Image 1 (cartoon, rainbow over the protein chains, first blue to last red):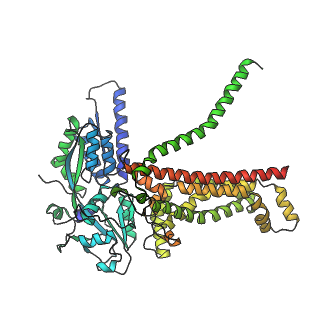
Image 2: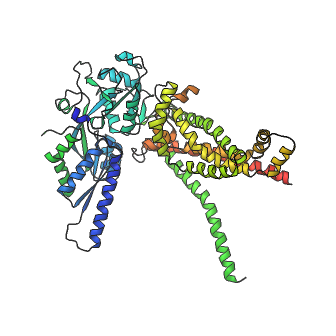
Length: 303
Length: 298
């Protein structure tokens, strides 16, 4: 876990870096064209957009892939899983990143445009429950977390903490993490459940916003992808609904399915990928790319 | 006058006329577009849902009242902060400060107007929100109040700039007459200069409010964005979600033509109508002021 937590989360830098990378590559490219020496193959740009959870990972992959295939440019942008899906459906990207499965209506919209989306599991992620370092609470069951976020539990003393109000923090509704948390924690995976976030849940536009508030505010509880947890906040051990088997989120507990709030991370293409996009996806499934996954605090996919 | 010159004259006159009308045309086109994209929401969303108290679009809860309420609370708070500060600053610059100080202050205030709102929001998250939480002992500093403080600050340059111009336009003779009658400086400012510049000062306030309603980035960063229906002045110290922040946060995710997309445009129509009303009030105030001035001159 310590290894996972040491990773800095330069989340906001992600899109900037991608832009800078693109700009550099484009400049280099046009300079090459200007020299009228077309020795190299014409370059191909792969547009990659979506989940903010994956954006750092996708950037790291894109950078490493430059060494593998310099003639392919990969431009990576974040914005949320929904944003990536919308772009995929509108045909403006080659690969959409998502931290949740494609919704039926998104699949239908893509099919209405002529091709059906193809899904690839590219990594696994655990969602950490974070609180202020001074908060004495260090373990919560899924039932308790659900009760906190639906508004049933309003004070930390009801879950073994101090007599303080609970301030619930969540990502915005366009975040895949938000949807996953709603379905797997608040509704405990039950599709019939109508449970909703308490209306006074703070919806923050970024992971940094959540980390900043949890770091400062002893009333706060938040959730975020394991890759974005910083050492300044405290991670809580979680037990499954009805269970008492508490586990901290680590690579091991996620792989052994002992940590209950873990999920798969996806890439989607429209239609079976071809050419360079297929090459890139194959490379992502390989050892080199999957070792980057563990470096960034995510969990690599098994063989 | 040659025929060529007359023709040039006519063309230039026509061009100026066209650019004058183009603003009206653009406003009408934007409104038509907003209406076209937003009005289907009125049909697609049942009225009880639209007037409900829950905004959670991914589960088809489209109650826009909490968002309207959030915008009103934040705007009201920002007005309470920005208007007194803005007008007193304008009074100081126009009436009290020595000339050299005035020439420093006015440009400084205008520099303040150029501050990017995302920077203020960042400052709000890092400095202001934690301070507000500690000082007022709130559960969280990400509240409508924090947003109101920052937006008040954003409104101040607009208010100061316009109000100061209005105060400056009051003829010197008014002040001299007041002083000659034995009025103190404060009495002159409060009873003579300020009432004489009233229409301009009210315009300044209205423009400040319009600026606040439309502000997006700062509120999105510091108000917590929880769509809770405000229930009184206590709501000022709780999180709120404004209409602008909702559009900004959610428009990236929506599929074009979906119910959610139309609902966001309906919020856009509402915002447009609100700022239209505010601007109309401002215009009406100015118009009334002008007719009075004309009466005096006649």
